[in-house]
Image (cartoon, rainbow, N blue to C red; front, side, top):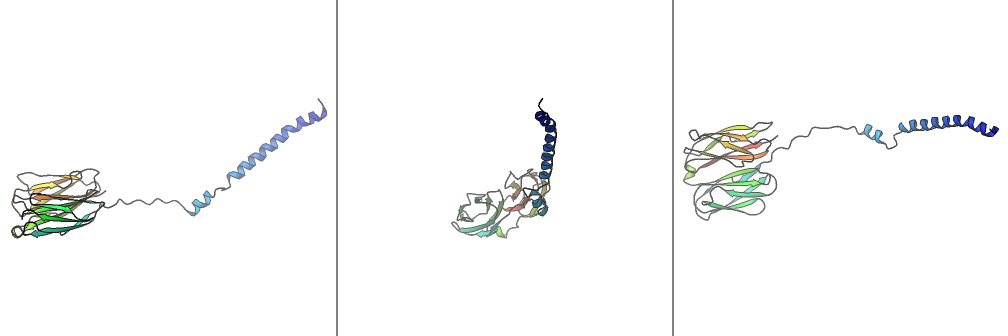
Length: 225
C-alpha cells in the first residue's frame, strides 16, 4: 500500500468520529431552542378549564292570562314573549272558539260560543304557556286552584304531585307535552295527580285540570339539568 493511502485510511476513523460528535451536539442544541415560540406562548397564556353551566330552561309569558268574554264573534288579542323560535297556537275546545296567529308573537281568539276555553301557545323548543277564556257566569263560580302553581325539577328529579280545589268533581288531568312528562291519577281521588318527567327531557310543561263543568286550571313544570 502506498504511504499516502495508508495515511488516509488511518485518519478516516478519527474524522468520522468528529463529525458524529458535531451532529449530536447540533441536535441537542436545537432541541432546547423554542423555534416556534410555543413555550413562551403557554408560559404567558396558561390553560384554564372553567366548568360550563347548564343553560336554564326558557319560559313563555302569555298575556292576558285570563279574559272574560260576553258575545259571539268577540275578538281577544293574546301576546306571547320569551321562549325559543316561532310560536304555535291552540285552543282546547274548537267548538267554543278559534285562535288565529297574527304577526310574530300575537294571536286573535274569536268567540264562537260564549263558553269557557283555554289558549295554549308553544315555541319550537316545546315550552308552553296557557291563558283562559271565562264567561260572566262562570267567573262568579268557585274557581279552580292548582297547588303548587309551579314546580321545578332538576338534578335528576322526576316526580311532582298536584292537588286541585274548587270547581266540581270529578277532575281530569292532562299533560301539555307528553314528550316532557305524563300525568296519572285515580278516578276516585281525582283531586290529586302525580306528574312523572321523561328522563333526559328538558323544557317547560303545563299540567291542566278540568272539572265536571268544564272549568280549567293549570300549573307549570320546569325541567332542567
